Length: 429
Ligand SMILES: Cc1cc2nc3c(=O)[nH]c(=O)nc-3n(C[C@H](O)[C@H](O)[C@H](O)COP(=O)(O)OP(=O)(O)OC[C@H]3O[C@@H](n4cnc5c(N)ncnc54)[C@H](O)[C@@H]3O)c2cc1C
Image 1 (cartoon, helix red, strand yellow):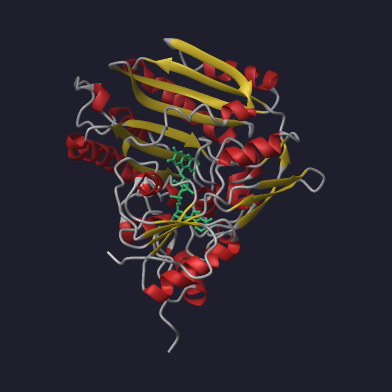
Image 2 (image 1 turned 90 degrees about the horizontal axis):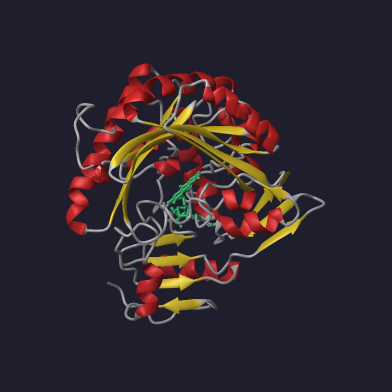
């Protein structure tokens, strides 16, 4: 590994191999990621970012950019390269009159949500508050407000997944948001869940925009459970009224209805999705949800329904509704693609013991493969280790060609390639 001693004109914190600070700062959300950068450059200003990039390029070192460190592949940590850590650049300014927010390129979602909600405002952000604004927005940014106000990238930068530069500050358009939310889950025994899921599927096209329909197939204790429900942001009375529609789907084993503030909603997933555990996941976009796709969803990657495995080791699955304002934007208007998606499917597994790596990864791959025949694409931020095949699933061919041409103009050497990489088009002859 190259030995770095100093970085010219860099005023941030330089962390070199050895010592607690190095190990603390190279660790990211997915505990499976264990890479060793030659240097970690914690940038405090745009000038630091410029100095870091110049140094890396002149030294021939690979560049990785870190905001929240939540990419499941750990794309923000290079082996032997320069890790440009933007997390000190996390300030948020809000102009409540203009309804705009300016957010540092290394900020976590929680900073944005808290600062905006002080003025009764918000923009679409993801569902776990310790995720980075940077990676989330540049890939698209799906959240509980997206069906009302569009994706994060529809209210800020237009996407491209970190391929076209390093963002030191985002500007977001904000919306007035009531500040109240509901989380509703009807929990079924899996044997009785199929009809409920078929009915839930039929609600998707006409659901109110304040509702994001959700479904999950998970393990509770040592038993499998299936739930259908929705997250509502807006007038709570209307959200409760919508519950009667859901109750027509069947008689659940349990009904969970929780009212909370919007800020609480944004962090209810924080602990279950905490840092440092080992993770593997797969995702798909589906424009239709057939009965067969629902059967594959319920089977959770197992060869047959009806077997009784160790459920704690079986991957979990979920559906989250798209549509609404996401589909109001033309597919050609941003790098983000597949705006006609009906639902996003995600499956994943979490464990601690490295000896389980193989078994866990195979199980999640099997679950992802079982849904693949029903998929029309994938969310770039849900992509894992699928390489260029995955990138081709995230962007349709004509969009990818346009993006490759832009990449040739802005980054012809592909210096920014530790991302879901859009390779530069060949130079014209
Ligand atoms: C627990 C969890 C919950 C999630 N929930 C959601 C959700 O609700 N909605 C959703 O849409 N997605 C969600 N995601 C996916 C998430 O959007 C991606 O993992 C995203 O890449 C994370 O961004 P980050 O900044 O935290 O990650 P990082 O690993 O720091 O960065 C990811 C990629 O973006 C690049 N990048 C980051 N910041 C910048 C910048 N400022 N300039 C240029 N490039 C940059 C990095 O180089 C890297 O390639 C979730 C992920 C996790 C792990």
